Image 1 (tube, rainbow, N blue to C red):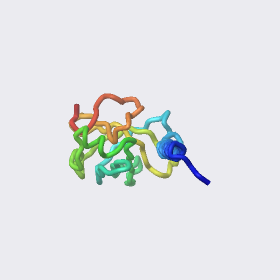
Image 2 (image 1 turned 30 degrees about the horizontal axis):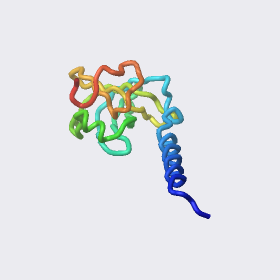
Image 3 (image 1 turned 120 degrees about the vertical axis):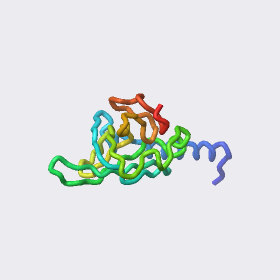
Image 4 (image 1 turned 90 degrees about the vertical axis):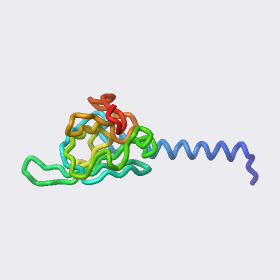
Length: 144
């Protein structure tokens, strides 16, 4: 069986398009029509690909502490271009995060979000265009 170069290239583009669409199917994992705000203490920030991650320790109403993971919808390269570093949010800093909750409620996870620092500066975490209530109020790590 022989394949022409155009059919091979076309097939490769088709497979790539299907893969990208599957990878970025956020509504399959996150409630994109809901937002949740949590407040907690920064445990770690990882500006890594494929998606950045912010880890917070959050105190529940009963006083118990839980670890929450905030996943950026964008990628590390976009965050770095917007001024983010691993020190934009310092470990131990108290922040608020507004984001889309996981469909697995036991996961204690949010997608992307707006991070509000103690001084009131709002930053978009992870890029990818947060679709929640405070979207557009602050982009990147520069506090613009």
